Image (cartoon, rainbow, N blue to C red; front, side, top):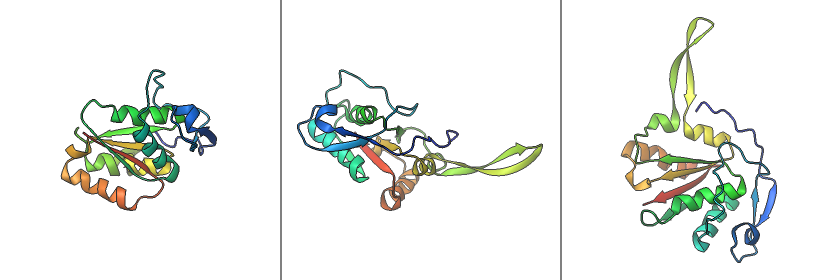
Length: 170
């Protein structure tokens, strides 16, 4: 990815879930003090689903993978994005039913011109970038992913630390 590091540090602002999301709980959640270009826009009219939101917040709090399933149009992706928006947490959506490839996830070698000479340089994909940045990565339309892409994704779920994966199934 060409974005480089987000340079936003770590989440330092403690929020009461009751105040921020309107959910009756004593839970507190950490967020970032400022928004960035990777933070979704806040929808001030959005009503948070109690159970889904608590599951998402537990994923943020304990750095665990969260899987959300439900029918089309029920607000799964929006719920994830609105949690990220309220916490100023960068959120990246990877749509697995599109033409995403293993190269998009992992990266590739590319030939570039540097001072008039051809050099080979690794261009990282979304996963290495996400590992270096505080970001929630949403794998959308999980059930539509191609087998070769899902193999890479499976490795992500099993072995990568410090990466919050939010998975949405139609």
